[in-house]
Length: 262
Image (tube, rainbow, N blue to C red; front, side):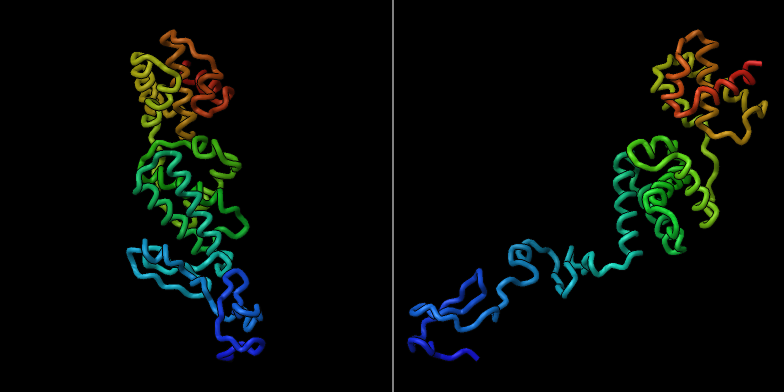
């Protein structure tokens, strides 16, 4: 208990030193007590004044919009992985300008995958990207794998492998992407004329009738279709230009183009 008077000089004039958390006699400078007062509340007054909801503060928690969240050091490994994955999904959805309902679908898929412990032995980035890719296909948003991994460290092979795991493990009812949805986007990148685009649509219909490319990826079918349409309409585009626009190897669509032209 702190005395009423200073034992050194007998005065009763004290002050609290903010930096050292000490109570000191103003007259003689004797330190009467140390670290006895908590001057900094867990939530600052400035934050309390800006708050629109009541704040609840406990050790290791922080208040946000009237809710209590755990600090990072209290989270389990699984909870940290979920937070990291959701952050990646939000960032990727923003980069691709995806609608909110696609973002919400991707979050649901990711959370279901985490609940089944599908992250065990896999990295969170590929799992979150595969969730976004699955959500795009479910809602018929024409996005190819190459667009998702453009600014990431994962490969197309890893993304597609994780996507297949999600599809099979979660029982996702995903229909194949319609190549017709991709033609306008790829044709725009190649700056093709309306006549060539119309011809490409006709060629794609013919390919489907003949069943030449059954089971092939939509971007491969579209790359082949556009390449053939450019040749038939004498609108010159190099194989490298078509490959860069569609993300399909020249050798791949060149092989199928010979079958289409037969």
